[in-house]
Image (cartoon, rainbow, N blue to C red; front, side, top):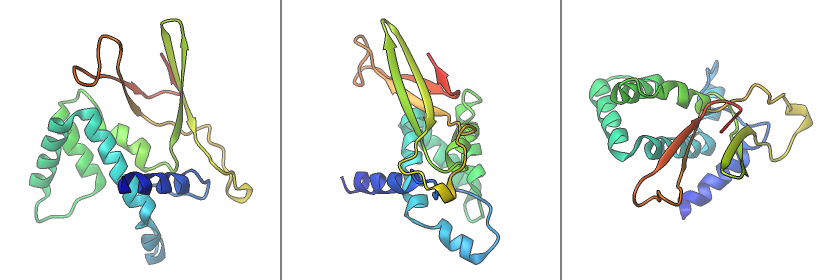
Length: 172
């Protein structure tokens, strides 16, 4: 419950146009200090939970083990974690490409689901809570790779999980 409260606070901050990405190049010590805030830590933790749910617990755990084994007593960068996850998924999913859309862009998507008969459509757009005119930039270029999981009447969370990766502005 506490973690959920922290997530919602981080999302509120991340929904402002003055937000910052989880990962970005820095030029000064002041910029480094700005990067290590609640947004970076809480959003980062949420993204890892999203990835764990999408990959499944066992696959995620195996990727973490490869990462720790490959980088014990050494230095690592975020790409090293994604490379370890790619290693365990054997090319079935480009984890680095998926996660880069979440960590190098500020903000998060609003996903809208529509239904016409048996056809389900989804679309994404950048969510902004409050547009600050002095910090406004166009959000047309924002695109996330969003792992969506869903259930149907013949498949619920206790028996199976269906997954869909929304990697375009809209899909069916």
